[in-house]
Amino acid sequence: MATVYVYSPFSGTIWGKDQYCNGDPHVVVWNLGGGLPIDIGNVSEGTIIRFAASSQVKSIRTKRAPVCRSQTGDWNQGVVVEMFAQYNAQCYIGTVSYGHVRNWVSDGVYNTRNKMLGVLPHDCNCGCSDGIHIHMQCGGGTRTGLNQCAGKYVSGGSTWIYKWSYYGWC
Image (cartoon, rainbow, N blue to C red; front, side, top):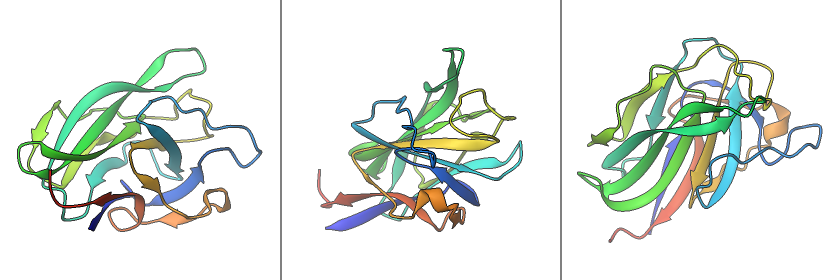
């Protein structure tokens, strides 16, 4: 059995998980079969958002989707990434959504495990944190064990945020 990792999309600080540090619940806005939301911030507008996964991922499918609800009830556009263990989107592994994305990647299938998804816009009006950040959720995976309320620093492309157990066959 292999373990598939998805890494932080950029270097920054983890801001929240199931609940905010004051105890309020973190709203799950994209139902991917578990949610497991996490926010990463302390970055600037225009920061590049990059999908990065371990070598077992051979292809991805991207699609723009309404991922994060604003305080006004509108939805911020985001990108959903489905991962596959074979080329051309064959042998599904799991899904990660990225909320608060501007200049997003085109919908499609890419034979890669590393892809620019877009850039961060100015501060969103979502109520999930105070500043520019990415909102991530997963489907079918497990979230990092870092203590999110402690403001832990994560490195883009090397600190894992979500993982999946994968048996290597379809």
